Image (cartoon, rainbow, N blue to C red; front, top):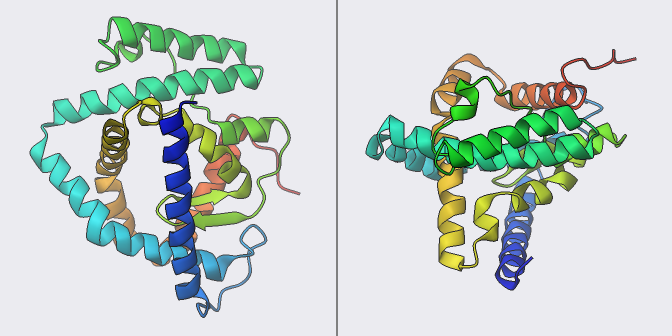
Length: 242
């Protein structure tokens, strides 16, 4: 890893630590009269961070993402999504190999080669049109396949909710994104910001539906997150919970 990458990680960790301290101070007295959930022993703390994230999203992130969709036409946003998805496919292929799923890794590798060349550095998803399957994997899933338990559910400032296992995998997942490897601070921040805003823009409709349909958004998001991650670790066939 180059020096600027290390400096970027250090800055990110420092900012996260400051944000976490502020959120903890604001949530120290938060309480909810809900039945305890074994996977969520820090529920009171998590709800406070969740509320902080919701406020940040409502007042900053969502408006920026909405403006982004207004300014850029859909075909440009699709190209941006495809570009970042190409890097995700590469990381998925690496994790598939780490999990011993060589065939899946080969398929993701073929997607990367096809979309990088024929798809013009990933701007066009030619691989999907050719029927080359993608197998989404990340390092949190790899840790799960290696036998690490999910651990307690934790909500982090800005980043959202993750199991403790996925939280340990998150730094490597972030390190696999294109902005992390650009040897220029301005470009690195710009690329990372574009990826973040584009991802939020892709979820605008879904989040609006969720806001209108769910009474306790925190519980819904937590349970859906834990169930989805468990399913992903077991490739859609998780064992029965005893």
